[in-house]
Length: 356
Image 1 (cartoon, rainbow, N blue to C red):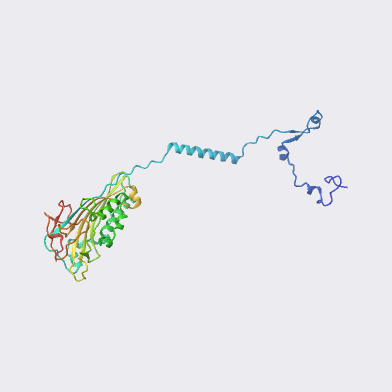
Image 2 (image 1 turned 120 degrees about the horizontal axis):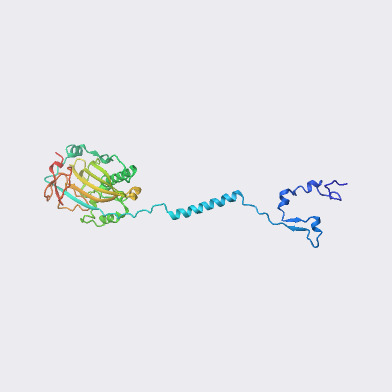
């Protein structure tokens, strides 16, 4: 005879033993019963005519879970923040960039008053000239102590000075530039707005104060002269100032002294000195500082010994040891002295030449 939990006829053959095992997966706990949509009427309720055996219960109205409330709240906050930021627009609109000025340049050849002095030893020429105390190469272009301005940080001032120095080094000391072989190392340091003027200067050089290659850089006529000594002597200064809240300006004033020999001559041929005084004014906005580029706005150059009868627009055509100029200028000009010359062609002061 079956137990209280067994079917009336006993456990069917082949079924697992024990009623509890058969119905173990079906659990009617209190929450399950309360959640049921159908509810059986009581015996008294079923005695009424045509009363159904069961009635449908109204659905339970449960509140949102805590996680759902938090998610809805986060979405609402994010949406509200987006609307607020869009209305307030806290980011400042970048100011329109000021137009970049074209480079204004002046190149003044300095004519010797007699024969150009020379000797086979370039070091002797340097020692007996005003360049005796000059430093060699980029060491003669030291960076000054940089101080922040009202609208530019220390690092931004340093960036302006460094870019100006790089331009001076590339345009005055690089052998490939001096030898008229390549100008790309200079070009990449210029603001993009000046590249058309730079390119036109080399494609169609003109002595118009805007398109002279020798206003952009130093380069020699390689059919006439070559470096006799790679240790170019340099001395000068750099100074940075703030011109307005969006612009830094760097003023550079340097004198370069080159030892030259005739092209193709051996080391025993006499060498002579060639001096170039360059006063450059650079301008930088914040884009230039970020891109390591410069706006070169003024270039004032004095160079000699040169003949005023020869064009110095595209290249310098140096007068070498023992040569004399065909014509001179109105007054002696010393490129080592402060102040600027005003003539279109000047005479190279005797004091600027080495004593041989």
